[in-house]
Every structure is written in structure tokens, then in C-alpha cells.
Image 1 (cartoon, rainbow, N blue to C red):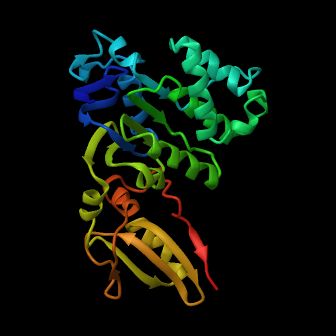
Image 2 (cartoon, one colour):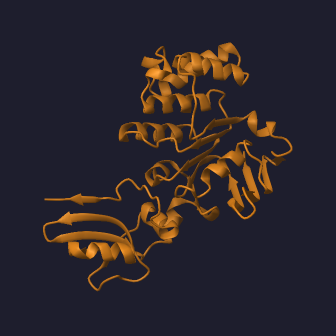
Image 3 (cartoon, helix red, strand yellow):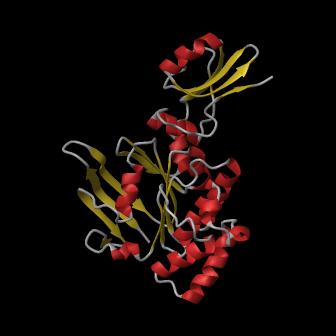
Length: 301
């Protein structure tokens, strides 16, 4: 199963492009679409899911042009948009039954599938509660379940873990990994650990342009020799942030342990360290709107 994008672009105004010249091939497994807010991720997701037509280029599903035959994708699609709407006065089970009926899943199959998904998403015990009483994490679980209710060949999820507590974020990441063996999963996010924990391949998007589409290991390898750590006075931290992409700082009694991205050693005492996917993201995209889980100052005794 393959989604292929050739020269895809979307223009919103005379000179305003959401995405431009995107060439991308997605096969079975999890593909992390990673980029800062405003990079064009949601635009690309809407194009792939046929919610929006591209201005330029083509999107094909197993060789079929989805612009001329959108049902080729819609019949095998599971989609969780960023702004996921529900009927708040329905219970979780009632809502999933409703979605299954809309997608043409027969009643017996739907019943078994919903039982499986309620257990898989961890909301089996609250399935008879009205959705309006759910927490944000529980609502996202319902969102994932509705996207999977028709057992789709193509699963597209947009920022599924934003605003969730760490435990629920890990649960949803594990769920996406567990269902990816025999389908194409496109996970759009600006949260690096979500991609690091789930994705077989990473597509980096910034300012509407595709910067890379490769496996995480290769992306990290490109950053080798460009990540440094050293101890700096607290007073120097502001200047370092101005001059470099600082990925983390650890406050110590004798100063600040700084980790940053640079093409050359920023100071003679700076030591090269092994890069991570977070570092690779910062190197390629920059620190704008980054959420890499631990890019924050910490204090140690």
C-alpha cells in the first residue's frame, strides 16, 4: 500500500503557499510528519485525506489519482484531525456505533471491532459515560478509536497527543505503533518524542517545504559532530541563546551545563556529544515552536 505525492503544493492567496513542491512516498509503517507550528503539516494532511485539493501536483493511492477518484482513499481511510468533534451527549460506545454505521461497517462486525478498540484505547470501563464528561485524554482515545473503527489501510492522525499528560501520551504512542504493521500511518506532530517513539521514517517539514524524508537513524547521523556540551556562567546563557540553538540547560552550583547545536565548537572547552533525534530536528528546522519534551532549564543539587 502506497501513498505518493508528486510536486504537491497548495496556494491560499496570490503568493501565499501552505506547502510547495512536496515529493513524498509513504508505505506501510508509521511516518512522522514533523515540523514547527505553521510548517504546513495540517495542509498536507488535508490534501492526503481528500479534504482539500492541491493547487499543483498529484496524490495517488496505490496508483489511483485521488483528485479524480477520492473514494479510493475515503473507503480505506481513518482520520483524526487536530480539531476533533464529537456528539457530547452520546456515550463512547454510542458514538463509535454511529461512526461505524456512517462508514458502512455491518452491525456484527462493528460490535466486535468496538469492543476491541475500547479495550485497546483504555476506555472500556467508561464506555457508557457521556463523552461530555470525558477528560482531554479520554476524548483523544475516542478519537483514535473512531479513526480505527473501519480497520483502515491508511490512518492519518494530526497532533494526537497535544495537551495530554505524559502517561496518556505514552499510551497513544504505543497504540499507534501497535496498529502500524499492516497499514500506512501518517502521524503529524511538532512533538519530537512522539515521532522518536513510533516512526519508522521521518518527514521534516518547515515553512511549507519538505527538508528530509528518511529513517530516524540517518537523520541523527547527519547531526553527528554538531552537538556540544560545556559548563558556562549563568550570565552567559542569554548570549549563547542568541548565537546558537540551545537544546537544554542544567543549572548547577558552579554554572549552567549547556547543550547546543553548532557547526563548529562554540568554545575550546566544549565537548562533542552523541546527537539525538531532538538535536537533529533542531539542526534542520531550528528552535522555533519546538516541543522536544525536555528543552527546558532544570536545576540539580
